[in-house]
Length: 247
Picture 1 (cartoon, rainbow, N blue to C red):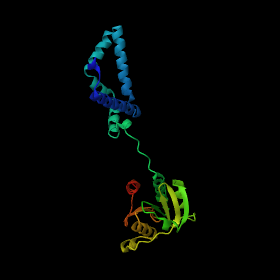
Picture 2: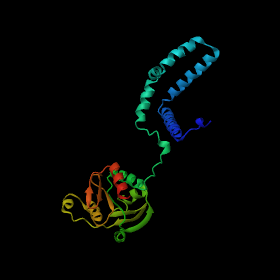
Picture 3: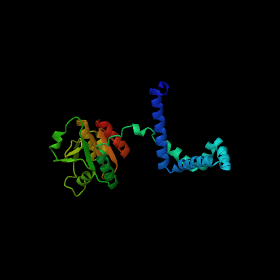
Picture 4: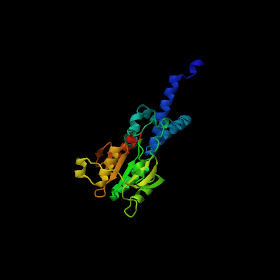
């Protein structure tokens, strides 16, 4: 009976086929193509009943369909098949075997910046990296609170006494607000930007921190890193910059 025992390649083959079939069934069900599976099941059930009762006419029709079953399925379920194939290009059939990515601790930050950008709420946020910013933290108001989107929006509200100056984030905590930062003396930036942007560039010149600015005039997002300022940064790009700079 050894010839019946599956070897390693057989197991891999079975697992891959199982994964593909399983994902396609889920996709068909989710995208409204489950009717295909129901229709095929009905035809199979009808074939079994007809064979048991010897219904010659039904068996004759089904036998005819059997030779052209693929064409029949495509004709009958063309809208559903088109929808499923369109969705397949965006679906990973091996998702059950992959780890779910860990949600970034800076998601509340990007959510808050998105809101502040929409409201044109001026803000300056600094993410500390390897170089500690203790000497700058001493110039502001220490908070040491868990990073949250709501707290960021409240602190940078014009009615808040802490909205002026910079906010410093260390890991997943807001360490301080109303922090005074050094202004960049770069003449090119001084000609085109205001205090917030110059402070963002200034702290990035003196440390490896990432500084994020939301313009009060335009609502546009700018990012300063290693003495360079990137302007008009969209949210997707901002998330990538934060991820890359905090690894």
